[in-house]
Length: 120
Image (cartoon, rainbow, N blue to C red; front, side):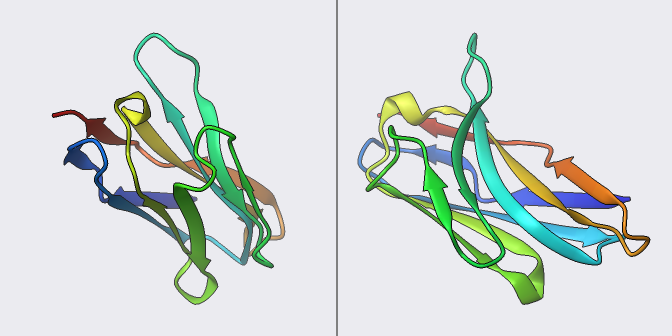
């Protein structure tokens, strides 16, 4: 079993910054892909950014140039630095992790979600 613990959400004014963190623990041999998704009220969950073990990144067009995803493989942790936040960034942000267990089975797990609210 793999557990994900997220932190860093909160209330911020437009133009402000937040940094989200997500740490994976449990039955993990190796983590391949990590990422962040978000879901606003009344909308479907959407991809924000992903990062491979080697550091290749992918971003939604709506966050390019404002958000930066990074990871620390030694700590099984992924980060999302969010700058120049806008009210439309308001959503619950979910961490996503994919990898192999110690038994060489694939897994993918989701965090519990952390609320980000951008408002004056």
